[in-house]
Image (cartoon, rainbow, N blue to C red; front, side, top):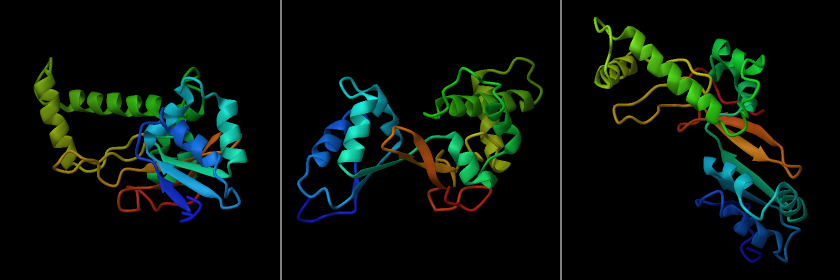
Length: 201
């Protein structure tokens, strides 16, 4: 690290093993050169790592001069960073305290909300079937896909023929040395999420 002095290191492992890398980087002899570690959404699991608490994370990032960025599934900070990429009506219940016991930092509550909402849409529009089966709902989901992007609190939902999301809003999150998670920006696979241009937050 000190010979090459990379600006960014990409970590492709599990969030629970990320502390090992961060600890080694924090002990490098060339801490005058700041390093940013970039990883995927599993980075949120760093908070569940046994033997690596919030204080240790703060120490490693601060004293080691390490920036930590990762992609997220959803994050409340993304709603301010790129408001056009989200449906304001679906975001509102999360903002006004309708879900007071939900921790929104890891994105799970928002993603489960959108998954259930999309399934309910499919059930409601399943034609001429009073008690739709899983197969009926699956067929309707395929038809919904052809209607274009569906609104969601995690961003507009559109699937390609391969089942992968198209231009889904992806928050890029920063874990700061004091342990807070903030949205640095919102992007997508091609750089512009459905519904609006990516903007820095």
